[in-house]
Image 1 (cartoon, rainbow, N blue to C red):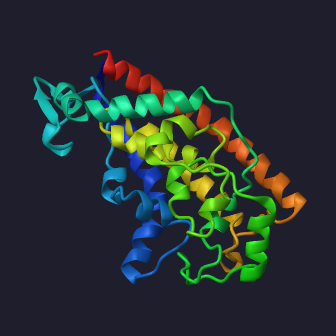
Image 2 (cartoon, rainbow, N blue to C red):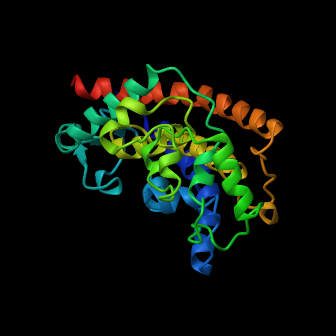
Length: 283
């Protein structure tokens, strides 16, 4: 597909403006040596450099008229009147990743969504321990009450990358015992972390997928992280975050409603990633 210079430059500019609203405050805090438990999480946890998120890519087999391949990086080829991604070369390096992502996301999409975990994974991460990940911020509840909530409600976490941060005392309380090998077997589309991870799978497919899709997944992950921490036992009211008190019936209902809304937002993004993988594997 050929894209005229005016069109792709407009898309690139729109992407850079959109992403700058997220990156600017993060980079300013980083320069000051500050950390934000919500806004900085996607950068620290996923490790995708801000400069890479800011860089616009059109995706595979998109010929950019009037473009200089050197401006887009080593994965691009110069053409007679522009530039195009060297799709074959990138595919050769990413084949295993594409197959894994396709399999995981297809399995997740085909499973019924579950909405009964109520965000207790964050509670299980601070259960009966003094080693708190976000130690700069206070807890809403005393340690004894946090333990009571975990023990009374039980934990139903299906996501390995959340479960692996549980305290040793909390792991036996989880209904499931997720492992990396069981990831495709257990992940389900109601899980906040599985939906947040769509951002990870999108950037791992870049530049084979367009940057607009990566940014769409980032936007979803950012909103999910906000709810994730609002439902946690941390007190982030000083940052303007109203808690979702999942220790109450009202709070659990609010959390489940947010979870359902995120599942609906995630569904088309997951499908776009699956479709991209399917198309790439068929080339």
